[in-house]
Amino acid sequence: MTKKPAQKKAAKSTAPKARIGFVGVGRMGANMARHLNDLKYKVTAVYDVNEAAADDLAKELGATACKKLADVTAHADIIFTVVTNDDAMKRIFLDKGDSLLKGAEGRTFINCATLSPGIQQKVAKAAADKKATCIEACMASSISHARTGKLYLMIGADDAVFKKHKKLLEDISLNLRHIGAIGKAAEVKALVNMVMNINTAGLAEGLGLAQSLGHDLKMICEVFSQTGANSRVLETDADDMIAREHDCWFSAEHAAKDSGIAAGLAKAQKLSLPLNDAAKAQYDRMVDLHIGGLDKSGIAELTFPGRTGTEKKKKKGGKKK
Image (cartoon, rainbow, N blue to C red):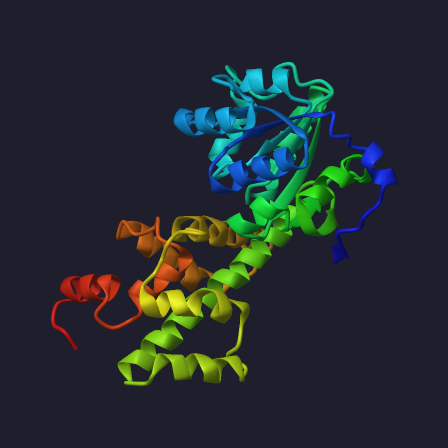
């Protein structure tokens, strides 16, 4: 893991003079843009399918709220993309109509969403055909980290492209890891989220069973923290599971999508991942119950006795056991 160094020479490689654009200005993208604006980078163009969000951020930063993707490319030298899934990535880069690749020669695209390795590679090739470059910068951090420039980034890029833009990447991150070529960072991010999702599902089951047995859950969490049941998820999600506070930092819908990416990679390698399959099924069920917009901690709604998911399951299953 490479911690953020203070290297004055690196500033010449990605000067703040470069015009910065953002496509996808939800909570992560908007706060990354705000942070770069604080550092005096020129955030010149923003775009989002939610035009009101783009308009508001543009006013705040003194940028242009673009109505077309090609206009972002025209107004920026480096474009960050933070989109929801592979289909959204295809739309912004590979659409035959409006596209970020129109007039893209000399541009660099820094793609930050959790996507499949295949779409990252396909977009990078399409960009190269237009004489543009791509960096995949997979994030394993939260909204507060985006706002303060303390993201953990897994980078997929050619060495030369990475070195050229390293200063910019360091300015939005606390920790930075160059994994390898395009696609490799997406593989590692899929592994990270797969394990995180499994841990979250496991914690929800443990706490749900503990409650049904009549244990004090604060005591259970303390015991977990001192034993092999300890995990990062225990620190971040346990209190929310107990209090039913599922304000979204990382949605169950996204968890389902990311576990699906891992499942696809496993299938290609002819591997069986039963725990990942089980966790994905739980997140898919949240989506089916129309609670996929909750934070991933909301998986506790499927395991704690008397909660939304368990109640509906009993209704569908007939007699209560």
